[in-house]
Length: 119
Image (cartoon, rainbow, N blue to C red; front, side, top):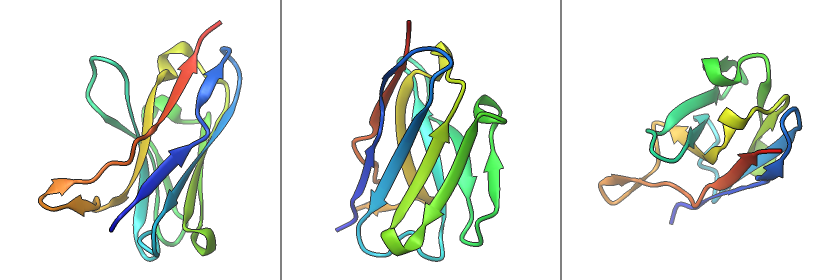
């Protein structure tokens, strides 16, 4: 059964940093692109960063220049280093493969990790 476990979130002051981790069961990251997403209260889930199987990366506007995505396939883990955090980065952060993992006919999401940026 697929399992994605996100961790590393917490409460941080504006300007601070966090490093998120996403550990996958089995080898589902291998040969797949992986993305980090986030969902703030009352807003739709948005894509934040993508890393391809060849380590090519793509960043969406919210995190450009501040976030760095990386992967360690030997550990089935993808990371998101977030620097210069802003209050608007507050959200629950999730990861998933591209295409996403399915549970039955629905997209599977892990529990996510809460990031709160506040003074």
